[in-house]
Length: 96
Image 1 (cartoon, rainbow, N blue to C red):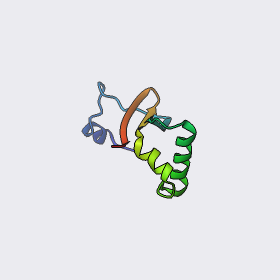
Image 2: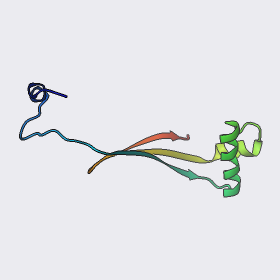
Image 3: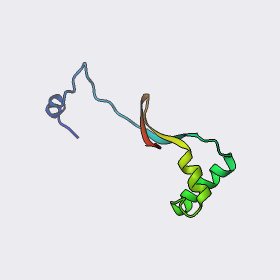
Image 4: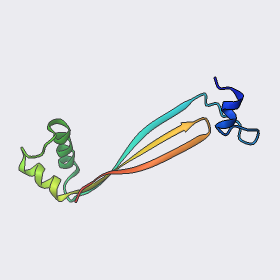
């Protein structure tokens, strides 16, 4: 707990009262934009290989698909406290 003097020093006043937040929610969403001439089935196989082995070097076909495709990943982070809302977008991955 703060004393009245401490709150006053921190800027709390009648015109700037303290706020109580009873609930905070947050989350993350990732959007990926992918441009390729490959079939979606092949692209899915490439991503499964990347997630499993962290590499596409074992398959020449997968490597070609990966290198000939462009993709951008954007992470949206949102924080919500009662009626306040903040959303930030971070571009995290962009292929050459």
